Image 1 (cartoon, rainbow, N blue to C red):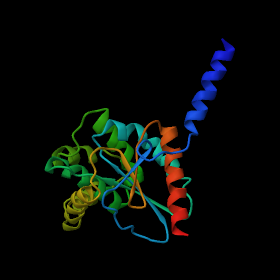
Image 2 (image 1 turned 30 degrees about the vertical axis):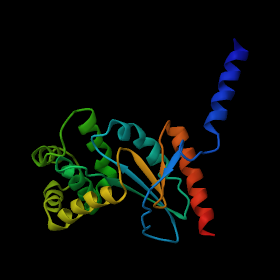
Image 3 (image 1 turned 60 degrees about the horizontal axis):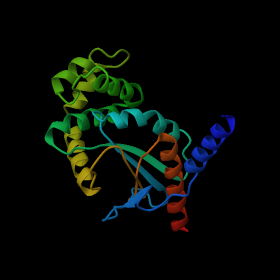
Image 4 (image 1 turned 180 degrees about the vertical axis):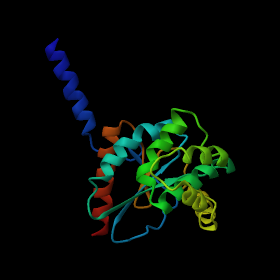
Length: 203
């Protein structure tokens, strides 16, 4: 029994550390996209607040982000496939613009996924944000309804199209490598290897 268990553990370890393969662990964007800073390896996580897989992967991605190398830039992007998703992009952009992302991102995810509050609905979001403690809800809502945030919503729809996002979460490295997600452990390993690949290509 112990020998069987050891063999299973060794097999699992070998799988977790297997070399990444094109078509299995990652694919390529048909139209590569420019990166914001050519001096850095860019990592973008396209997600949505209504996506249960994004919700489940969020802690692993946040933990990875805290240890990212100095030559890597990382950001999240809320996708917009249709008009009903614009509210999520508006909320996300507002969190970023008001400096409340770290405080409100996970609670918003909890509200959407666990409590089933439709935060894409401006009325529901307004009600929810007024219940959050430690923030200036009036100032946040002023930003939420501003022209600048309207522009960010339009940008979210455009970047979703430009990067050909078909599902979430989708992680793209350096504007061309599309990570095929599996377990959080394998996901971070593939991500790190794609970063190393992109880094080597810059030399």
